[in-house]
Image (cartoon, helix red, strand yellow):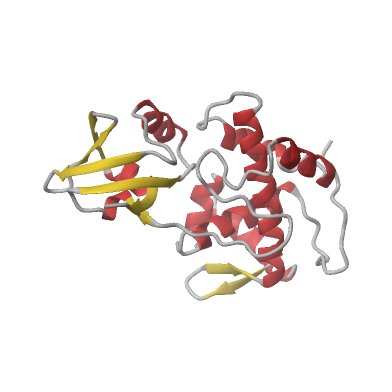
Length: 232
């Protein structure tokens, strides 16, 4: 049975169901990446039909959580962002708990956290945070929002944009594709790793990188998922 979260005076009248929280978290994720929040983009992320997304966006708009904009796009309101940050915090804390305490791999935790994030109370959330030692990032390198205070959702440069002959430190890896995460992990590419960008094959070919002395070709899907900064 899903735990009911305590309502606060500034809560809007729309019930915060699991579906509502999923939409808010995904919209927040897309906005944080600087990606347009479109009906088709949400449908792909949430694996639902576009008409289903359109219906939910209308509900979210009437509840004061999103604003619809031209081009079938949407953005979070202040209230919507507040709630989105809360569910994002729970999601990333649960991912971290599943990885650090239960030993799940980083390609497994996203789907499990997506189910569990709606069922834990604030008390359990705070207990998880304390047991983990108040972590600042989840297994994918995503920053975990604090209980209160400002939160910065920043994505540095994707590996795709880094030219050859540079050293690159991985900070975050998109968690959308579990197969991609497994592939990267097998090659030692995860947050905190420093790799060398060697060369790029022409005509859309792979980017060659070196990790711990081993060379690997990475296609665009993988290099778009890996974000970080040039260290030299």
